[in-house]
Length: 315
Ligand SMILES: NC(=O)c1ccc[n+]([C@@H]2O[C@H](COP(=O)([O-])OP(=O)(O)OC[C@H]3O[C@@H](n4cnc5c(N)ncnc54)[C@H](OP(=O)(O)O)[C@@H]3O)[C@@H](O)[C@H]2O)c1
Image (cartoon, rainbow, N blue to C red; front, side, top):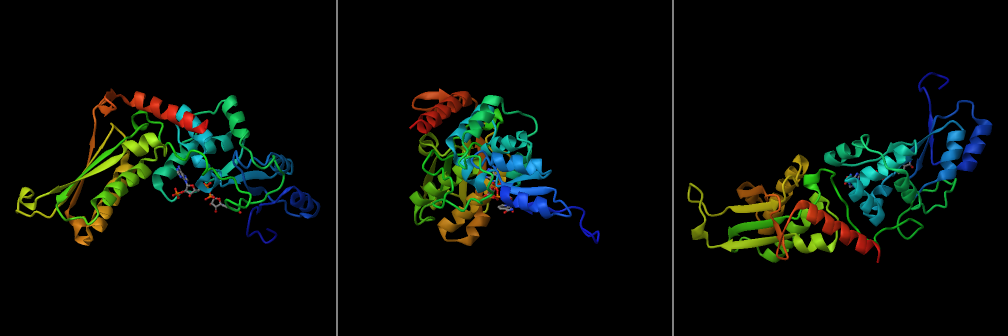
């Protein structure tokens, strides 16, 4: 700084005592303290201490490096606000006046994580999130070191995430049909399970029985005499994915087609299958999701999923 090479400096993981020591000695006061903050690591005393010293608090790992996204309360609030769990956690930090530093390797998530400036969490919600703290509102800046070493682990609770507040994308429950000449796949059952699980992952619906039991793939093996393109070839695979209307945004469409094509080629033990696989995305009409003898609307499915999440969270 004295040489004019940097304008200002920041510190990271400085706890209360370190800030005190720094305040006694600093010639060039730092401007930022980057510390781990989320509702589960709500270091209220450290935030207050940092701010009193004139430091902006930058909250890293606001999603708990991903693990807080599975928390049932966070998921319930996401349903309530029709937002993603990540958006709820990021919004909480913003409403606390913190600078937030989150991370994702996936563009749709990065965009979604930015999309937090057009809603407010009400006071009751903020208090409910505050109550998740596991640090005793410490002024220490200890890092989360992972499950089993003091970290807060949600795995024992209800896992699951909710991806979108778009009403059309609230409740995807896909069906997948794979049509292929017989003997294309050594393990058709394994392929079906993998496709179903992959699609649930891409859609980021809550990982609850309602979705796990009702997301399925069917592998139809056909005599090759019954398959032909214009040239008479019989070695193609067709994968048809049926979701409710608007369930897949562009990022998810791209992910489904790319990942399904790779999975089909892998299951067929033939890289060349990638060039001979069609993945077709189709949508059901509103009210056209028949389950247990009833033609469900999206709203009915949302209500059923919400009830199940609440029931599971209460156990
Ligand atoms: N100063 C320090 O000591 C310190 C310590 C730790 C971290 N940091 C910094 O803080 C930043 C964030 O840290 P972090 O990675 O621990 O934080 P995080 O933002 O709490 O968690 C990132 C994880 O959440 C997932 N994720 C992000 N958005 C998501 C979404 N919308 N839906 C589902 N999953 C989502 C990411 O997976 P995908 O990539 O698959 O989306 C990634 O696994 C990093 O830049 C890191 O360098 C600083």
